[in-house]
Picture 1 (cartoon, rainbow, N blue to C red):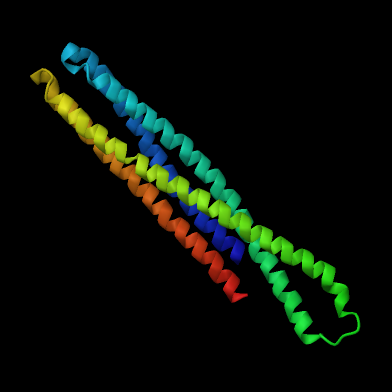
Picture 2 (picture 1 turned 30 degrees about the horizontal axis):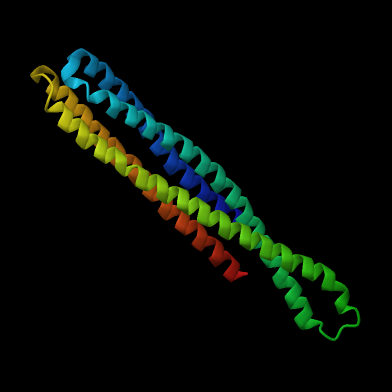
Length: 209
């Protein structure tokens, strides 16, 4: 039961990030269109080129970090599952010690009990470290995506300076960038919320053992 619950949450995190990746790829196409339109607009749209380069960099960052987060989330799910199992075994040891404390050979379990304690501690430490790293990556990505909102504002400013025939199209591109950035940030925020649920779920499972 624990394994299913933890892996389901991990899959949901991956699904949210994948939706953000899809939007990011669409944003890359928007940047390409902006670059092509800026070439047609000539010198008055020269400011668009470095801005569209920034969009490409942001898209690359989103794709790279999302992939890394998914890999880490899957690994963390395996650690959490192993931690729950190890904790369950440790509780069984403690129950046996409690029921059979006067048994003649009870201390023959000491070595195995000690190994289980050490493994449980190691897994808990690994989970805590991995949890902090993953949460930090998600928060960093969420913060980085604020840059896209600034980019959309810069695009709007640049659009106001181009020839009239290109203003409408470039303003539309600026709006598309803003909408895409907000959409990606929302998916990352959902991933953060799901990850909080993942951590909570693990603790609830351990508490129920």
